[in-house]
Image 1 (cartoon, helix red, strand yellow):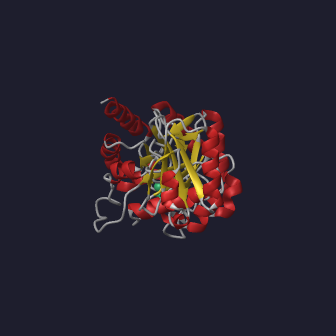
Image 2 (cartoon, protein in one colour; image 1 turned 90 degrees about the vertical axis):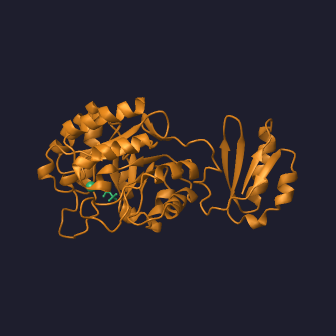
Image 3 (tube, rainbow, N blue to C red; image 1 turned 180 degrees about the vertical axis):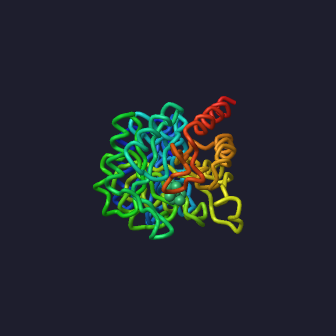
Length: 332
Ligand code: PEP
Ligand code: MN
């Protein structure tokens, strides 16, 4: 349920309203826009006398929100949310580009890639330290050492770092990580989501392999219900029946749909969506053109020797070319 307040409502009146709502056992989501203040009521709203709320002097209108996602709903927060990450951000004026290797392999590898992607215009460095691999016999990542390597590259380049978490017990290792990634395979790991809700860290929530948009937003809601509203959504392709030529199907229509449904920023990962380096550029351009707030792209200094996802990894030179074209699209 939302209550739109009348212009001119004083702080004291607002405080009185919020106290009353909280006394009913509900939580409040306050959105102060340039033109409107909206009070979102989260919880069992059957306890609220809707007519009474509507009749208050300071209330202009009251609306029930039928969607099950409340905090993530644009009706609760009409303006776009901007997630601050160090000196940069996602969802505001800056087009966020997270680039780097699928897996952290060595200090030299990460540093070389970090410098190259920074020079090409990336705003953040990505790299997997804990890797969710389909086979237990494949490279599982450098784990804690991988995070140390990323932190070293952050110190050298100033780029904030994005890396994936697979187990809430590992959270202490992520203290200096700027953005914690929840991978597609963990999108519905609700216990992990609840733990992340207790932190204040920006969370990059990737779409599950076969998740609907509603399921994805409900996963964001899990994190937000714990008090962490710093969420960035990442479309990374969904499973379909043809995996011969593309790894997944990139659902670009999800971008404008999400921009209607939610205030959270949404970026696109054309690397995992396609599985093929030569498809990354056209999909990165299409994602930029349809309104994504940013991109996540895998870049490797020697894709042929990559320990993970070499086929979809761009060389630094290819990444530079993609960035130039992305900037042209953005100018248009
Ligand atoms: C990744 O970004 O390295 C990754 C494993 O992505 P996803 O969870 O989308 O498969
Ligand atoms: Mn990968």
